Image 1 (cartoon, rainbow, N blue to C red):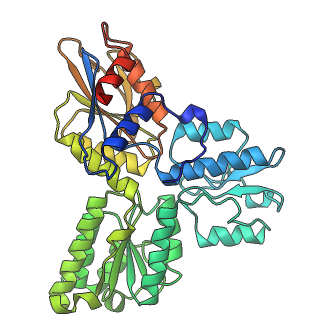
Image 2: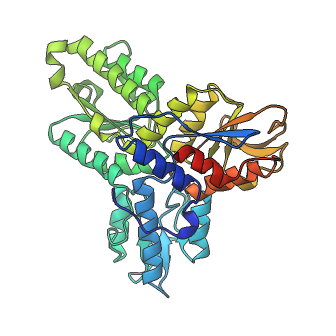
Length: 407
């Protein structure tokens, strides 16, 4: 795996050692059990996999190199490079400006740009329409392109499937930048439709099987299908790809559901003519992080903390998984831990920050599950550990605990 040159302030002194120990002991990544840090009165269960993935580190390296190599030039990002407030704040402080917000609303008019400007494509990629717009302005959209290679892998698979007359089902969030980009690329070669979850996939399966009228497709999937989509014709041969930050297990569940519907309609002996196996397009980092979260669920703890951007799709899915068993606090940084008794955290259901009391306990050993999203620097997780340790007396030294797990 390539080593990226990212700013020192994103790097970690604690988590980096833990990850190196686990890497040496488990190079094939077969053990998804957490690392346990026993500080005495408080214990942390650290997920086996979390934090910056290949695509995020690649994007950060390109962005900072672009800034350093182009002093005096105007530098723009299409929108947030990744969904992490700290990283995006750093870029803004270095003079980078965002052309759009994460919903696609224009913050700076295209007319303000000129061919001397630099525009960085974020890790999510972008649409064909925006690529053409940049070219019209004399700006090469590929010169400073941080699109994640695993997102591009999905695009390439969509191209190959389209060449074989497969329709593409994209498991993703309709308004997410990555899904918009994937849909834009997919429709160049294939009839395409976006499916948000297993509920929507079941509706599509019912339409395939004739249990819902074909006309219902246009009503239910309004704005989520390609121009000229013909459900009678285009639901005969199907391949499923995903927004790489979605739950891999849900993508697989959707794939199996569609496959079973096609088997029911055409017969098992003909399924290879109607369904494409696309499991190899699933993002390894998303998969590893989610499997590590399932590993956390096999343990007991008093609470769980997930660190990351509130608009981060992959992070929110980790929160959803942990909420099934633990009282879970979704925080963007250690600063959200107000005191030993209170924490400001994000409520996924109501889409707002809330202040909760009775945060930490000092009566017995307090066990905390800790993980983060793929766009969160390990240094932010270090800060959470240090902040929580500051509330407890008579804790072991960090170096002592790290020596215990490395012995």
